[in-house]
Length: 637
Image 1: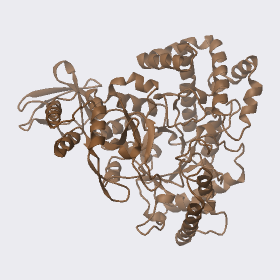
Image 2: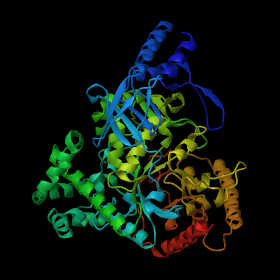
Image 3: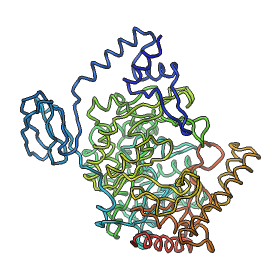
């Protein structure tokens, strides 16, 4: 088979044949990988003749009118034949009639939203706002300098959380943060999970459209007396207390005990039957399909239990967002949208026609993972999204943004391209697949304004040229994280040179905390887990000490001091950046050394299990003072 035939076919199918790696080195996807990826896309071509036949079919498909097109106000949109008249009907009933120009286009109407057109209104035009809803819109400030806390939900301690965190525990943190002037609490993913095992990850969900009932706070919905009484009648109070006292989450045991409580609560929920029925009716076929799946996956055979559990979870978090706004938070809760889903979960089953079959999400080799990564997650197929009018993506955005003040999108680079690996292959035998970035960003901007939710994109890793600029132009906030915010010589950028269009962070859940980073706690763990040998750890520690000294110099050069607590000094340093929103992980607010997740490790490190202390103590107060001082300095012209 001639290589050009295969490569041309792959490019037409959206597979990026030539790409540049993290070191700036040009790479080309091998023929065997291209064949495997094309097979998974349903394009079977192993000979020149088969390539040409498949190429002709793809070319023919590209001429078919899509069911949904997107544009911004005034942009030319191809909607019909030259000289024809097209009537557009807006979702609110407004009508506009336009004549198609000689080039076959009409200018998109100025009113954002969904417009139907064509015979029997079978096609849609989405007119998107120019940009997403922003921090300035949420706070009513021209140049906001807000801050918030990033919270791993499982890590918080609530009075009845079975040791796995819930909305009740998050409320205490939210109240504390609101009292001290914070405008946001960013949550770890709350997606519906697979049945709990020993190696839980919030980024490997069963279904991103629904919530994990394990993090519901029944007392907030049903009342403290009713919830506690049911707990005691079920004989679970002692076990709940024992689990709540642990330093680490016991996912299998905690989940089993909490589901026993949820079943007991469901049996006594008759007084809420009308509310639950209304919730089920609003969820429609999608909720029905998920709860049927959950009844099988969790082995209880009771879909009504899972409807009840979803109702509890939705009410719990909606109430917390209302409290956030009532306590003066301009943004409130920020959801976290995982990049993919478990291929055996309900999202994959519900959207089977739109899911990539036989391809798993991952990442190519880089400085942190020399062999690359295969995350074991499924994703949507770009071609299937187009054919469906992007229905799965639009539904997902509505579900995740509902009752939230913002959303953080994990691996925002997926709007442009995803690294996909054929099932059973290693990460080095993957390829990037193109996604329709313009259309996805248009739909994201519209959903953002409809829900009045800010949008943060995790734009870390191998970022294509111009990508961050495209995000910024549409009002999507990037992420500037202290360890990565460097100049060309590897030094730390002065705060004034951080981006105006990104949230500023001290660290993330995949990186060491400030305190842990300074002492090389992460390097010790990597040595313990076999990711570094003794010589490698010594070299890494020498480099770390050099970095620590460089950060201290940068703090002093920016007008700070390193005489006191170095964690507090770094918090103030990050808070002086021009970012409209600084998000500080709770672990850094408390000066903790352990990080939530150590990538590349499953068994040895307690990933997604660390619990926060019961009391914030003086560390919180010192952190709040430093952040407040830094934010005031950042707001000073």
